[in-house]
Image 1 (cartoon, rainbow, N blue to C red):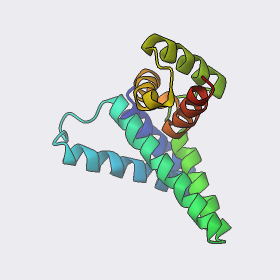
Image 2 (tube, one colour):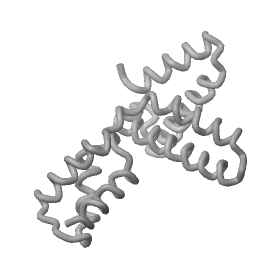
Image 3 (tube, rainbow, N blue to C red):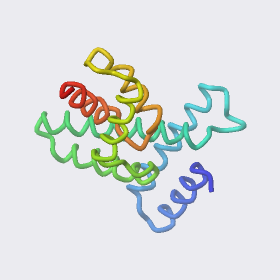
Image 4 (cartoon, rainbow, N blue to C red):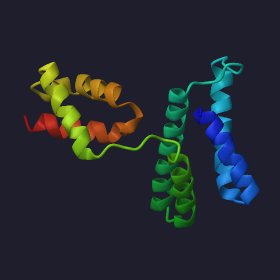
Length: 152
């Protein structure tokens, strides 16, 4: 089943069960997908699952960043709402790899590329992101690559 169909089915289920919160979050995901389809002139054929996963990951990141801002502004009730929305959206993302698994990939790519100092950090980060895709957060990858290259 395509990811877009799964989102539609989950939206129907949320509406039928009376879960208004999940329904609103799923509607916002559908709106983001529709906006991207229109922007790319792909309204008729739609986006592929990989593109939809990237959009959802971007929306989850926005929610998490907003939650941090609300926490810093002493508005925990708003932060909780953003975190809850991010959790609902995260159900449509692939399982995130652990830091140990990411470090294994980083070590292999560092040795494959022959990088021996922090100057090659961008090259390593790009290769790791390309290989892992949306199964690892970019900020976590950058942090782990920086740690790995500073220990060489």
